[in-house]
Length: 253
Image (tube, rainbow, N blue to C red):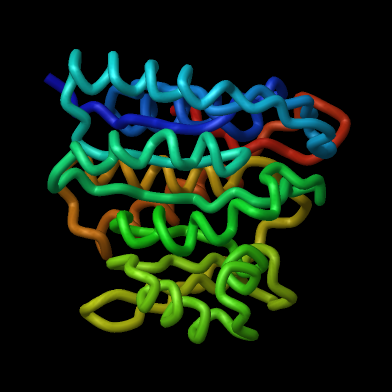
């Protein structure tokens, strides 16, 4: 039996991000993806243009069926388009005792388009982040969630909100290398990766899904975070360009 990673996220029809990215990542790393879709989107490799949230009762129904049929070894949460959908998953998460939960707080597409309603932020801070094992925002998301001005202060605030660990990624920062900061009860770890040229669509989904998969396979958070970052870097090194916009990580091994 291979471990099951329960993925709660939206659908990106371009295949760059969202559930297709999650499926490719989890499968490539040797686990089984079980999926509950939260939204359809109008999206391509250039940007996101519209979000069509699933009815919250439909999201709950998907999850109810899945957790009765199979026991996830980890959960990855991506796009939650509005408060109603976010609140629809809370009771399910509370039934998954001791299952590690990774939250990628998706707020804005890599092309700049909004993906979640603005009133989702308080729900993330008060109800979802306190339930999670690792929260994996990029730097702009981390600053928006916390009101802080740098990665370290943002990570500290995310822990104060209730997360066990925070992994703040620096792909969007104005630095020569990509600097990622992992903060948890064992301290802080800064990793630096050579910045790959170009713009990419779906790196955040890839990172969070890879991290959840390694947790599902029994790795601790620092080891899972290191492996996930390496997987993203390898995926960017051989990135694909199927469209006319941003490149897509090559997650298929």
